[in-house]
Image 1 (cartoon, rainbow, N blue to C red):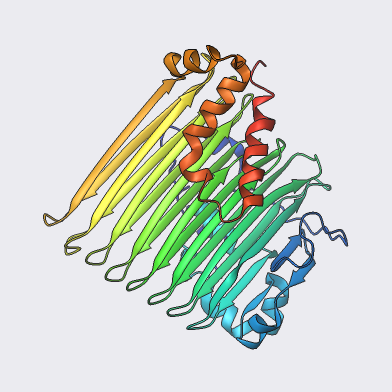
Image 2: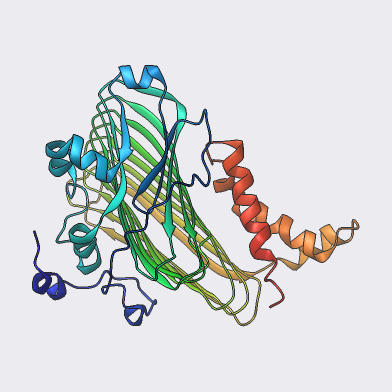
Length: 394
């Protein structure tokens, strides 16, 4: 346990060029709503849907159950597998990491627990859907832990939504532990509502010759700070962090994407694409760090921001911290407007300006969009782009 005084003494997580201290994300009252409604998942989809305190959908194939795969709501997992859950929670993101992560550790009362044993290969996409029931004015404090055994393989699609319109806050921490030789694709579509101000912290610990690839789509409507990180702690560990985001109205989204090359011959790549509308703000911070002794490692990053309004604000801030000579590293960053030549080319062929802009944005985000693990997920991302473009003229 970490007492409240100790939590208050910890620093807030740093999001360069984002002023969020006034959002009061360190003052939470965990919500306790329940529901019997399933909002998004239907049979025969493999996975789980947790809404507030309730597990409203849960389905695994007989083969996955026979292999020892565990996918259940965090509250149920704490009751059924208490010692295992207690042993794992906080091993990827320390409860002392920062004030907001420590607070989440102490206060979370919902979430999802996933355990995939060694050597298990899951062919189906595993769906994890987490819904914030914003109906009482209280806050969403959730934890997801995903443990992938040695040489296991899985593709995860995690979604997050706000149900309801009450003004609330959310704190969601996601820990991913990829053991030796594990192969993991972790895709997510975040769609928290306009009245939800949030802190989202995702981190993977990647061991020898394991791979964790993030496909991270941020389509929240409220003010949000988001962290995506990979610790490459084993030799030959690999992580690609692909991030797209689109902001509207007066919202602020601040992201920091970090890859720490701690092991020899590790590969960490960051690829970020963002589009800004209206008077919104989008900030990409990328940090690649190669420690002393991580010989033969590779750290690359590229961040691009496309501004569709003169009143919007965008930043792309790359940072490389290299403490070893025998490595490769590089970065690129840009903030700019829609290419006039692209628009002219499309419009000269009879395409309206609005449709042309949509095509340019799809192309701009295409490298991440096409890596979403299902066609339905790709369609959801395109639908989110279409929805947000409705605010283009506001």
